[in-house]
Image (cartoon, rainbow, N blue to C red; front, side):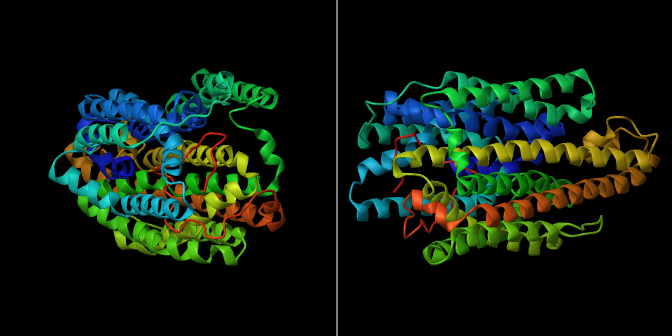
Length: 507
């Protein structure tokens, strides 16, 4: 339910834009509001589950998610949808932070636990592979609101099943919630993302942007100070003294920043520039997800025979290569121009997925594997949020510059309409005789912006590959136990970040 709900959002965004008359900033927040609250509450949710009970937090988070899904489905404005998505992220954080711990307690034997985790991994992999297709079918046959409303019966049924079949567990020695870390971390993330999304509209030198950026820097510095002094920190910064741990965090962040925000802009390109339907768009995303689903099990089986940095570094290099293959579009390009890049990028993510979680917990003692996994997944969500905002700022700026160069007398709101995929609205805002020129300009400007962010994302991925090869050293894994058989199923990132409490052991 969770993975389908998130993967289908990308395919549904163009229809959301038309239904709610959303601008680009509103569309960015549909994804970023979810990613920000998920990242902000993920680590604290693990500690809260230890104190209050993991089943209780799981069902409570599921109830919040279901209620937020109803609000998403009923939203009549972009703001209402964005706020409901933020509430979904809060519920999702509680579920992600406890799901694997609940499975681990129910299946104590190594063989049973392995089967349980295999089924769980196969479910996440299938949802990733089928999500765009299922989402496209729902949006085309019903309406975008049903991608959220269908969560109602599924969620209520899951709550009933959990209360009947899953036992409660908690950690009697759990520490207090790191309230100071939670407030400063979430505040810094929100202000940074807000400034990046609104920078083009407000002006990068304006007080409306400079003040949030400055406040974000202050809050981030305060967060670091709090975490360094806390007895039980939400995010133990001392782990970054281990080079391999820093390298793994860099991989998690750069992969999420480079690849996954591109789904938003590619969906707009496929539907609003090339004119494909939501179902057709979902089909065109399948090469990446299917290749990922096929490659990850193979990579998981051979991961124990090669250094983990070979999988992480090579995988990120392939992600960068895939983005470069998609770069170079022009106004006459068809969707097949994206196909080589989608296949190569999916192959790269397939190499990364089974190794990333293993590497994150393999460099720390087993007792700290929960926090290490949570930090790793938090970096993924932060990468998605800042990637969408930062790449979106570049995308929007390039479109504005291209329109101004080609049509200097066009209305001021034309670039934003083009960037958000509302070219038809832009055409209606000018005289009929000017529409053919504006249509051609819109396509050229959109593709120019897409090429710019594809190139930047590729460079980020390649920089992450360099960091992986340089920092992830085999000798650092002496601090923890590296499983001999890493999970073969695809990792659910970016659609799900599986957090955990500080005392949970990851099998």
